[in-house]
Length: 260
Image (cartoon, rainbow, N blue to C red; front, side, top):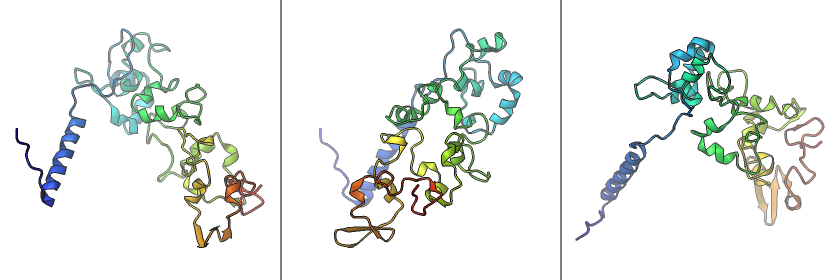
């Protein structure tokens, strides 16, 4: 069998590339299997959102505009099962008049969230994380599940994403006489909130974290200047916050170099 010649023109290679990406795209979106399966409850069937709203009208009204409303599914009869996508089929719960054990409560376990957020399951398995898997907190402590954006604050609201963090981390909230400008951008500039291989969920374990913002200049061979000061002898002594120089990384009341 004679193999076809590969196109040698620029247009030919472009056409080949487009064809390859098209096949890849189709293979990713055209599947005949369930990509995300709602939680299962023994003996329960789907009842639809209208049945849920009878008792949970306050939640149902707000959920229409929630980020998670976009992941609503339909059962085999075409009935929308938005609530049951995360809480499981509700017939047993309805027949019992409510109560624990008859419905899935993602607020008590992150496993329902992990069905879609697979990457977060991996991040929470890293050495330094929030205590989610030990049951000391839930996804709902930081995320709004039933109304508005899943990540509250920000945008036109008079609050920032860091306000989520400072609900628990009150000592880091300030105000400080000498603030660290990075805190204006939010905690996630330095921290990976779901988990990290570094202590304190830092994005980097050493000076590289600070040097993402603090410009370094090598105007003299063998010397590194940061903030106009020669740091050549400082950098080998440890991180910026552990070498006795800038321990007050969130802000200081006594020193503009962020010292205690």
